[in-house]
Image (cartoon, rainbow, N blue to C red; front, side, top):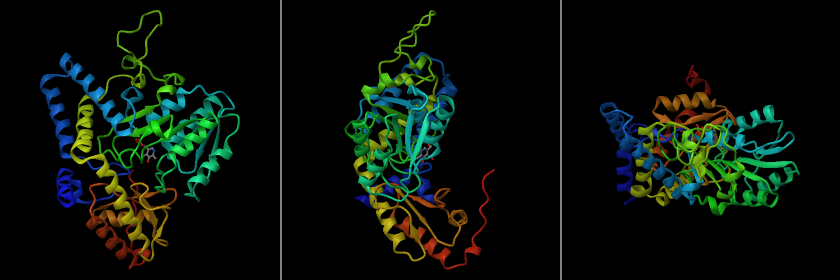
Length: 403
Ligand SMILES: Cc1ncc(COP(=O)(O)O)c(C=O)c1O
C-alpha cells in the first residue's frame, strides 16, 4: 500500500526520481499537476487576456478557497488567515503592525532565521525597541526552554518571536507551553513556521499562539511567492496595516476621498493588491492534492518516520556527529562530519545528485526528509557519506558560492 502510494507520489514529483531530493527545508519538490494548473492558467491568460470579469470572480473564489485550505490545515477559521507571499512577509506584517514604543522589549532566540530577525532590527532602529536573545542552542528540554524564555520577561516585554521548528537544528519548540506562559505574562507570540507548516500536525487555536507566519514553497511543496499568516481572531484589532490597498478593504469600493475606508473584517485586510493569479490557482490545486489525494496524517507520519530513520542511521555511522537533538520532531536532521568542510561535502554530494544543503550557523550539513523520500534515498546518502569519510578531507571538491 505504502509502496504503491509512494510510487504514485514519486511519479507525480519527477525530481524525486531524478535525484535524491533531501532539501525540502529550502524548497519542496513540485508536483506535475501543480505545474499543469500553472501552465493551463498562464495559457488561458495568454489566449483570453487577464482583465475579464470572469477571471476576477474566479480569482476571488480561489483566494477564498486558499484561505480555507490553510485554515483546514492549521485548525483555524478562514477569517484568521491572510494570504502572503512568503514567511518573511507574515513576520513583517506583525512586527510592524504592533504599536511598539521606545523601550518595549521583544524576546527571541538563537535558533532564528533572518526572516524573523531582520524586522526586529528595523524596529530597533526605527522605534527604539530592545531585543533580548535567549540562547537555546544547548537545550532541547521543553521545560528548560520555557523557563529560559520566561526568565527573560520583564514588565516591558511585549512579544516573544520564535520558530516552531528551528531551521538550523531541526528541533521543535513547545508551541503550546511557550504560548501559555507568554499569555500569563500578557505577552504576545509571533512564530516563524517556515519549517513546521506541512511537516508536522498543527492546531493553532488550541496552541494559543497569536501570530503564525507560513510559507507555501517549502513543506507544502507549493510554488514560490505563496504563503499565509494566521492571526488569532482576538488579536486582529491589535495590528495596524503597514501596507494597504484595494485588496485590504471589505469591498474595493469601500473608501471615500475624505480619508475614510473600511478594512476587511478578517485577516485578509493584510492582503494588499494584485497577485500572481495563475500561481494562486496552482497553489490551491497543490494543497488539494496534498490534503485530499495523499492525506495530511499520512504525510506527517511519513516525514517523522523518515527523519527518525535518518537520525538513527547517521548516529550509527562513525565519523558523523548529529546536531539535531531529538529524532523525528520535524523533517530536518542536521549533522557534521568532523574534519570535513560542510560546504565542500555538500558539493561532493551534489555531484552525485544528492541534494542537501549546508548551514552557515552552526556550520553543518542539513537533510530534509520529505513524505516522498524512500529508504533507498537514505541509503544512497549514507553510502555517499561513507565514501567521503573513506577519503581525505582534502579530496573534497571546492565549494564555489553562487555569484
Ligand atoms: C526558519 C525560516 N524562516 C524564514 C525563512 C524564509 O522563508 P521565506 O522565503 O518563506 O520568507 C526560512 C527559509 O529559508 C526559514 O528556514
